Length: 212
Ligand code: AMP
Image (tube, rainbow, N blue to C red; front, top):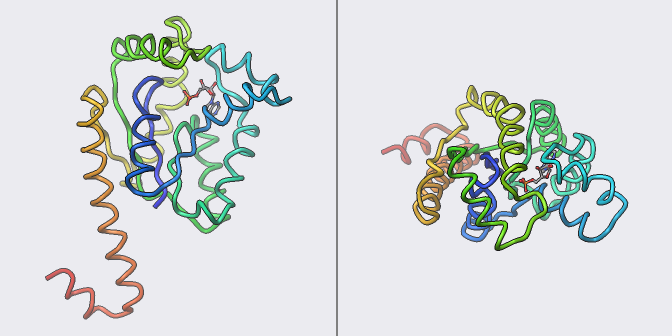
């Protein structure tokens, strides 16, 4: 299964993605972490993007697309990806569809962590002390929240029609959120398993047996 996790900066996307990856043997593909790694490794790309990231703005679509294609095209990660931080705008959402189609995959679940701006400010200041990220201060946090509202919220509508979207209360405790997400994923996995069995069985009789 491939899934996308949406949420404003500080909503707990990273924490929950790591939990899901461990529990369901998936791979967390965090574009923010990949980009920050370029900066800390002092690569050419890193020096090109550091001012953009530190200003709370979005890196170019092409740059991020190249990064994620390396994972989507790799068989090790086939149907095992958690997209954490991608897509961030409508062009990226369309690009993701295109890339997944190219490598014969799709999105099975979209999660949205909803959190208020006040909670975000508190969490980002806490995280600044723990992780010392250059883009974690109140002013940039507000900027990143606004970028999220403007560019990323419309992307969520893009997935609404597909019935893949599940909204999770991101104000709850980490464990409560993890439990809720686990329940959602177990449900989807059950469905995916049933559909696969149905396809392989190739006749209606076997499908009826599972429904009984
Ligand atoms: P995150 O760790 O997801 O909060 O991302 C940190 C920063 O990396 C963002 O504020 C952006 O500057 C950049 N970034 C991460 N993902 C993307 C993306 N999909 N498109 C453009 N910029 C991104």
